[in-house]
Structures are given as structure tokens and as C-alpha cells.
Amino acid sequence: RNKEFASIEDLSWSPDEHQTKIKDRLKKFFHRRPTRESLMKKGIYKDEPMFGCHLSDVCNHEDSHIPRFVRLCVEAIESKEENMKTDGLYRVSANLSQVQKIRLQVDQNNLSVLEQEEDAHVLCGALKLFFRELKTPLIPFDVFDAALKASAYTNQKDKIKHFKEIVKSLPTPNRHTLEFLLRHLLNVEVTVRHIGDPPVQGASLTIRGEVEARIGVGSSALRFQRIVTQFHSFNRMHISNLAIVFGPTLMWSEEETSNMAFDLMMQNLVIECLLQEFDSIFK
Image (cartoon, rainbow, N blue to C red; front, side, top):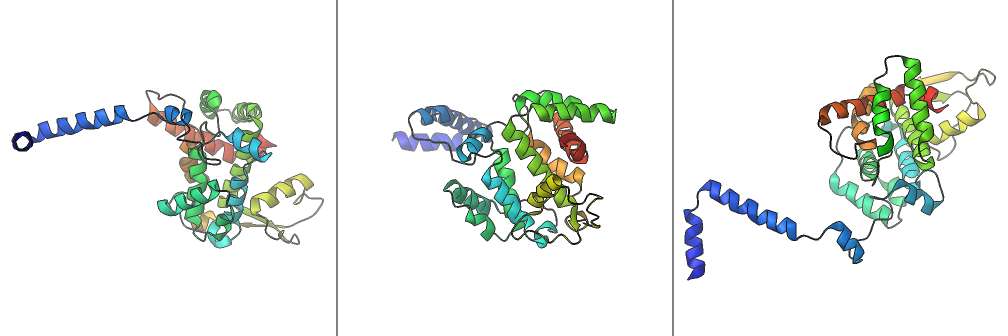
């Protein structure tokens, strides 16, 4: 009888009353849910070995300055020219289920899944997910305000000076990983090749760029003629577009601010400046 009465009562409720009841039930449900912290204390929930961690923990575990996943993912993206020419690279959303499959495999230390993946958007989606899910952003909270301020300088010399100081202050894994990623993003927009300099077998453009920078390939002394392939004419990812994608991916405020739209715009300007003045800031 009580059930019958309840069902009759339910039918008599107005749409607004129905919504209120549903909201109340959802609130009770979420309040009863245990927190992540409590699940971790009980050993029910554990951190993933790669995604959703602190960058320093990943690098310390691997004894490296740049996570192996980041290196191999970039190498897989840059290994094929057709990948770099993919329209909307990093901007177009990838198949989420495929990205999650890569995440699962990588967390099980199966990094070979990256070289087996043929969809450039999936590889880019996995790389973006890694940076978005870091416990602290690649550009850490403690330099967030300083970076926004530096991006607003109108004098170019002052802007570069302050960004150099910010980059220099970053923890070693953050600094090296940021430099590596930005170099890759610049390759997405423009790639430089050298006549007479055969590509290293299996080496990505970014890794070759690191070697070239160290040994001086491309300098006047070596007399290499440069051929510039502008991939942005194919993928339509100019620096400004890359900055829009990676602004909120590489940095965010520790606490919500009153003007999130303005901060987001400034975050994009930070990444845009780091890309535009890459050589001056990281030299």
C-alpha cells in the first residue's frame, strides 16, 4: 500500500517538484560518495604510473628529465610527414575510446602501442591528456601570475627577459619537458631540413633538432642550405592556434579566479610568446 501511495503521490507532483526531488537525491548520493583521498588511504584507489601524476615523480622513476611517454609520443607523431600535415593537428578532438586505450596500455608499460597507432589525432589527444591530467601543471602554480604578467609587457626585451627568468626558475623536469614540447609544436608549424644531412633512422624531428642545436648543424661554418617545409599550410595550425589549444593544457590557476575568460586569454598569450621567442628564451 505504501508503494502504491508513493507512486500515486509521484504522479501528482509538478515538473518543478520532480526536478527538486531529483536534485535532492543526487546531492545525497554525491555526499555519500567517498573522497579520492579516503579511497587512497584504504588502498582501494591508487595513482596511475604515468597519467595523473606529478611530473617529477614520473621523471624520478625513469631517471630522466623528460617522460619517456612524451618522447615516444612526439617521435610517433613526427615520424610520418602525413601526420604533420593532418588538418587540425592538436585542435581536432580524437576518438576518446582510442585515447583511453592508449592511456591504459601506457600505464601498463606497453609503450609500443604508440608506434602502432596510425591516427595522428589519437596520438595528439593522448599527449594533451597527459599534460592536462598532471597533478600540477607543466608551468607550475607558483609562476602562473608571473607568466601572465610577463606576457602583458609591451617592450619585447623586457618580455623575453622575464620569460627567461621564469623558465630558469622551473624545476628541471618541467624546464626540459617544456622546451622539448615547444620545439615539437614549432615543428608542427614549420620544419627545417638540411641538404646533405640525412635524417637519423627512427629519430623524430624534435630529437634531431636537439642534436643539431648542440653540434651547430645549419651554422654558416657548415654551409648547409636550409629547405623550409611549412606544415601549417596543410594542418592550419599556426602558432596562435597552437597557443589556444595549449594555453589551458600547460598552465592553469591553483584557485578559480573572478575573471576566468581573461586569464584564459592571457594563458594563450603566454604559450604564444614562448613559441614566438623560443630561441631567445631557451638559448
